[in-house]
Amino acid sequence: MSNQQQNIPLTDAQIEAIAEKAAEVALNKVYTEVGRSVLKKLAWLVGVVVIGLAMWLAGNGNLPKG
Image (cartoon, rainbow, N blue to C red; front, side):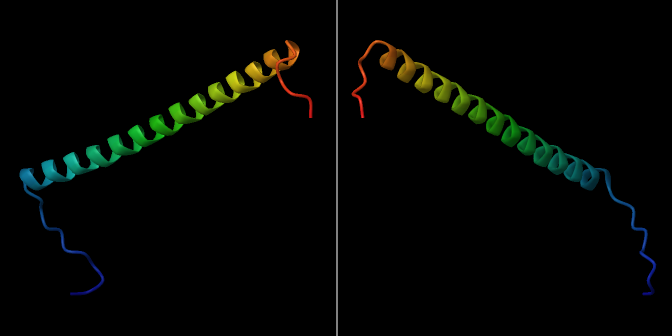
């Protein structure tokens, strides 16, 4: 066989299997990105709440002075 590729036709079942696998991989990537995005937003929210709580406690004199 030379450098040319052989053109072997795929069956409908093979094409369907390839398409399903590609869709599965793409969906997994989307779910991963959505999960990452949600975790980042949750981390920001927790940080804002913690800083806000610390400022509120400091304003009320409830934090020990260091």
